[in-house]
Length: 219
Image 1: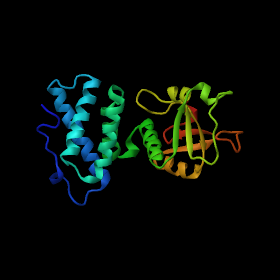
Image 2: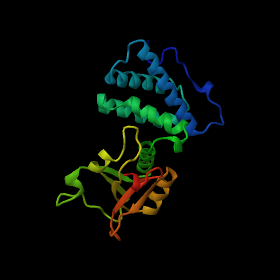
Image 3: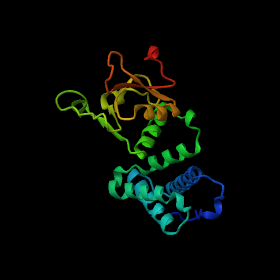
């Protein structure tokens, strides 16, 4: 089965009243269904084959204008990921993330999913987001945080142990934040997270990221 064969989802399936979010969710759903059928045909049995199939399917969808022009940037971004990162693109995960974030109720998703959604949204609004390894986090080689730059950096060692296998927070998550902290906190709170200044660190860039479901007493 070729890319998208038997799945001629097009503009006729969309209504004029649907939002961009719904249209993006529809795109992601179609891609996931196409991938599922390809798996049944034995065409996408490994992650590299999944990436190849989705890259080809998305390219065909873009060339044939199968979806509204509003979602073209999403298709182009996914294609760039697939073409530049190859087997490391993890396109299925990215498409699944798109579908979940567009079609599901965000508050029902796991802590890790909601935090990822918030941080990806921050990046779209030109925030710098980095995960720092130990030598970048502290010591003489630590990354310098600049007050005038909107940035959030998360400790890799903290991130590695902060969530259980289902994505729920079990331990505090340390972050360094500069720039418009109130704006970032508003975004985090919309995803049931908050950034709390660390005790005895007045004026510091050091914060504790906490999910709505997390309790320090349970850590």
